Amino acid sequence: MTSTYPLLLSLHDLQLKEQETSKAELAWVLSKVLPRCLASLRDTLAECQELLQPREPGVVLPLSSVRSEALKGFIRRVGTQIVKSEMQIKIQGLIRGQLYKISLSPGDTITINQLAMAQSLIEVTLEQLSMKIDLSNSSTALGHIDTLLSNLKLACNSLKTPSPAELFPQTSINHELDQIFSPPLPSHVSVNIHICEAAIITEIRTLVLHDERPKNGEGGMASKLGLIRINPNAQDDVYEFEGGYARVVDRVRVESQDPNIISLSAKLAGV
Image (tube, rainbow, N blue to C red; front, side, top):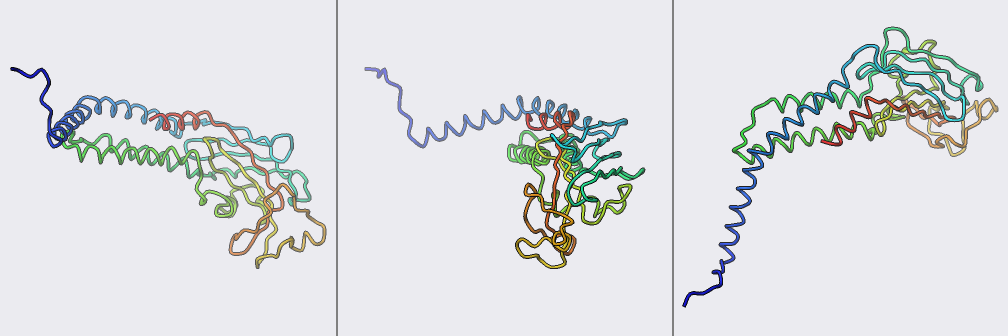
């Protein structure tokens, strides 16, 4: 009598079958699917690279504080650099709150480090994609893919969240790059430009500078004499700054939407 039930495989045989199936699926993905995905990735990264090319006239972005005259003006970005800017600043702690006009000095530029980082990672990834990959060796192929994805994740994150090194008090453009603004800004004013969520953020702070860490509520001689008043909306913290300490008097933050950076971020996030 012939049995109508299939023979049951042992657990060991089932595990072998599963391993064989997994290897066959992986080989199919590496030989048939992966080449098409890598070609598509190469095209997308070429588009990303194009968005960061330093082509004139670049992109002009307005600077306009919401419901106040604290900061008005514009910046012009070409590639990873700001090549021109004019600002009108009106905040506490700067010439008694009167209007102060500055412009980026001719020939001077401000590099947006996060854009430069993204550009470098995109270029490295494109170079890696141009290399011949041994798709028959799954370990080598998967290791190569992990490296590509790691670089692209870093590039994408660099356009979303700035590192502490890009922010005040670790970075103050007008203190790091001498005399880039005309007329020069006083030493107690800090300018910071970075990227957050694919937007260019311009921050200006007026400060009270101290040689030693001030006690709570101590605003420096100017504050004691009534020449300045700490804005309750400013960050009421003491920072280590330029070899001393600083307390923020007033702060203005303006967000400028750059269509190319938005597109770049979306393309990287979609990879």
